[in-house]
Image (tube, rainbow, N blue to C red; front, side, top):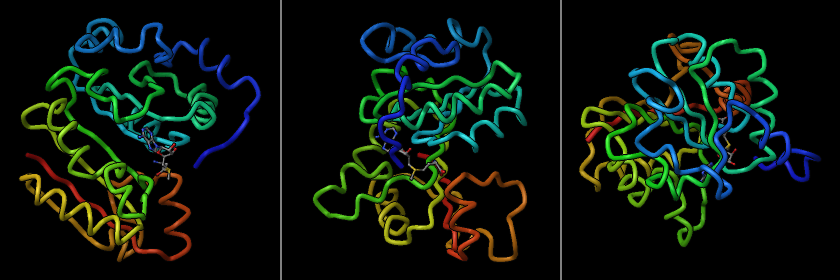
Length: 216
Ligand code: SAM
């Protein structure tokens, strides 16, 4: 999902109080300091990488005031949509970070994150691009650094080849699968599940939604 040429997106993001800038100004200044400097509490930090327009993480944040959430998105043109929606959220437990997840270790200290959500990540179908998939072993190595010892990774997608690849990468990387399904909504919308924008779209099209949860 890349929305091109949104006029004023950069400027709007730069002045947003809930978005941490990563344009060489203060981006990685909060590595290891998210709770102390940004949230001003000791609550666990959960992040979503590739949040898109942010529906999922915004609903999580409003339901779970005892968790600190950080929504990560690579493109300003997409992040701007999340900012617009965030205006309706009154709580302070959700921040946004515009960055490429390849650099995630620059932004989080070892064990700083308790949970990572990946939802409908870009599939990068060509083999030669497999390292760019957010569930590749290369990314799992990065998550291994920033996740707390008992931290968990949750992934949802309707893309079966990407899901199969992810199951394999998790196994090869020595992670442990806590649960997985190839059809989360087999019996109608699953309980205790927040649908992302993509999930809603694909569920309505009748695509089975896959989900896994894993830890090291
Ligand atoms: N998670 C949302 C959902 O389920 O509705 C959006 C899914 S969309 C297919 C994938 C999103 O991940 C896009 O907004 C894209 O810009 C973002 N993304 C892809 N690669 C990324 C990366 N390396 N770092 C941060 N965000 C990334």
